Structure formats: C-alpha cells, structure tokens
Image (cartoon, rainbow, N blue to C red; front, top):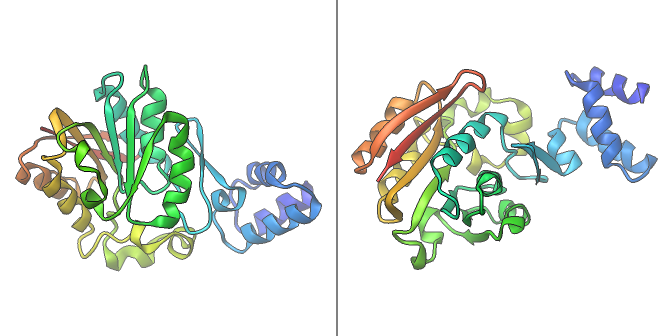
Length: 253
C-alpha cells in the first residue's frame, strides 16, 4: 500500500491514500491493481478507472468516455427533490450517465416515473444501468426529439446539467476532463449557453401545469440562463449554494 500511495502522490494525486484504497478495492488481483494504477498515473479520472462515482450517496456506474457527475450538481438534486411530489414524472435531459434522475428518484417517497435522455450512446450504456433500480426509461436523441410523445405536457420535474463551458475556455479545464470526457458534454458554445437556450425554448410543451425546469449554470452565467427561461414563458428564480459553489436556475410553468 505504501508504494501505491507514493506512486499516486508522485503523479500529483492530492488524496493519494483515499485513491489507493479505492484502487485496491476495485482490483481483482495484483496484476489488475498494477493496470489500474498505471491508468490513474497516466491521467485517467479515478472514477473511470474504478468504474463508479459517488453521487448523492449512491454509486453511479461510469467508464471511459463518459462525463463524471460532479459533487456540485448534488445541489440541483436537492432543489429538485424539494419541488417534486411523490410519484412525480421526472425527466433527466442531457442525462449523461443518468446520475441526476437516479438520485432524484432515489430520494422521492414512493419513487418517480423516471425518464432520461441524451444524444451520446456511450453515456447511455451507463445511464440504463443507473436508472434501472428506479424503473427508469432511457431515450437516445437530440434533446426533446428523443422523447416519446406520451411525455408531452406530463413532466413535473425536468432536471438538466447541460454543458455550459464556453468553447474557448475548454482549454482551461483540468486535463482529466479535457482529455477523457466527451467534448459534447463540456462545450456549451461561444458563450457556454447554446444548449441552455435550446432547452428553455422547447421546455413548456413538455412540462405539466406547475412543472419545474432546473438547470445548473455558473454564477456568472446565471442572469443569461434566467433570461432564456423567462423568454420561454417560465416564471424564474435562481438559487445558490456557497457550500458547493453551485448555481441553479429554476423555471416554473
């Protein structure tokens, strides 16, 4: 274990002891452990190497080429759960590995009618596994075009963690994200808000009366995200978490 920790520390892993325990737990034997260590030292995200990420106290399956759910996004889940009724129709749009929808459904008394959609088929491999314990259904396609018409006008809670990094700022991201997560899950266009505007513009026909759209954004971008939701005919407010450095804009039908 000591040599493992030293190797991780030399590679710049700040939490080398914790990572060593996770790698050891994921390895089937010494050769496998050496392989996992080499991948981590080579710069792969720890979650890709061990095959899962902790999110809202749950293990979400992830893997190479998939966006790793961030801890700050737990704030969006918290806000969604506060707004949802038991058995609500929950849609995780731009779902990636389906972590948001699964976490919301896990926390609702009586569960939820859960749907998740994304354009990336590789991410949906993991999403299917993550939403399965909650009876979730997964749809592949570009935003609302992926959805069955039977969902129109029925969504109580629409949760969205779409990409919001401006294209020119991708190069400033940590190499773990920049080199190992798909660009489609990071690049939000010139000002970072291309997808936010598209999500907002198409939301109202899918929301139930009184339904809520929650979008993660940055503090800097939140006025523009809010403006997009207002222009789409939603009543809008923004909420922040200083603890998680998170901002969520909420629009209500």
